[in-house]
Length: 237
Image (cartoon, rainbow, N blue to C red):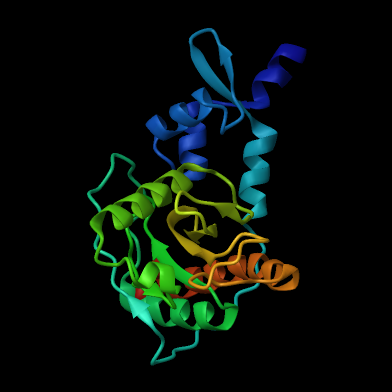
């Protein structure tokens, strides 16, 4: 009885792949380096059910603000990077995402971009900080940013948090869902770390930082709403 109960509390890699919509090679890589809770049963990885359910439940129940269009925001075009081996749902088109991203970046006082789950930009970078705006023509900077975004896509963390990236400024990210599919990420960045005096980065006090982290899931929820795939019933009507 106890053995059957223990097995029921463990997911297989195939079950995790289905639940999280992340391909199996990524799941194995994250299990091996400790980013995803897992244990070895013989030669096979098994995944404790409770943390996986917590990951799923933490992304649910978000309020969905209505999408608002805007014009005249500063944007910067970022070339797409070469695709990786991760396969996920097809990302939504830029035309549906850009107005929401432009407005959110302006209101929150940060630069913001939406990428697919390979870290490739879908939208233009909205409200770029001066540091980023002056380096848009440098391919090495863009390649480094895209590589960092690709790493962030592998992190199965649904709660956003600020972290310092390779270029010395802080960023946070949140995942965009379309039903049970992960389709992309919202990244907010260009933020000077606390105590760093930099004229070419955005400076947020403690209250603004908390407001940003609280707002990012709502931004992702708004994007999920405007890009939601129509159901069979709505297509037939």
